[in-house]
Length: 274
Image (cartoon, rainbow, N blue to C red):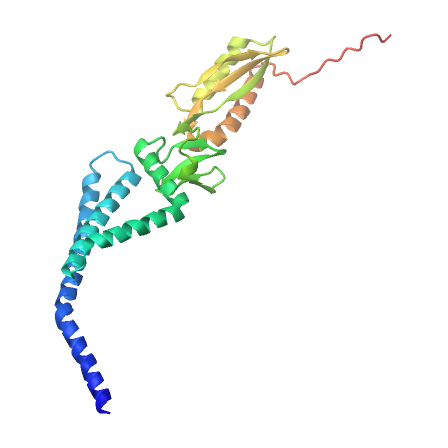
C-alpha cells in the first residue's frame, strides 16, 4: 500500500512539475497561435479588398488571398513552436523529407496545381468565354487550381483536369460566335435581290450583333445552284437558336419575293438504250 502511495505521489509530483515547467509555455504558444488565426483572417480580408482595385481574375485573387493567409499562419506557428522550445531546423528537414514523399505519391494532383497556376497567370481563357479543347466545348464557368468547369449547351457541366488543358491546342471563341446559314438559290433567280433580302433579314434579327457586322455573300457556285452564306455574329447563349430562326425567316421571305429555291436534283442519262 505504501509503495502504491509513493508511486502515485511520484506521478503527481512529476505532472505538477511538468505543468509548472511547460504550462506557461504551452499557454503562451496557444495564445500566439490564436492571435495568428485572427491576424491571418484580418490580412485575408484586407488583401482581398486591396486586390479588388486591380484588374485580376477571381482565381488569381483567391490564390493570393490564400497565400497571404497561409504565410501569416506559418509565421505565427513557427513563433509558437519556438516558444515551446522546439528546434525548427530538424523540424523543417523532416517536413522537407515528408513533402518529397508526398509529392511522389500525388504527382497527378501536383501536375494539376502547376497547370492551374499556369492557366491562372497566362490567361489563355477567362470565365464566361466559350472554349473548345480535347474534344469538349462549353462556356468557362469556374477556374480552380485543380480543374476547369465548362457549362455545356445541354445544361450539363464538363470538368476538365488542368493538366489536360496545358500543352493542348485550345480554341477560344471568346464571348461571341459566328454562325452560318447557307441558302441554295437558282441560277435564274435575281441574285442581287436575294442578297439584299437575306442581308436585311439577318440584320433585323434581335440576336444578331451589329458589331462585328454580319456577312452575306456568295460562297460557292455549285453545279446547279448558287450557294449564298449568311454569317452573323451572336452571343454565346444565342448560337444554338440563331441558325434555326434565320433559316425559317429567309425561306419565307425568299418565297414571298418569288425567288426560286431549287430542291436537290440528280439527272441520270442512260447511254446505249433505244
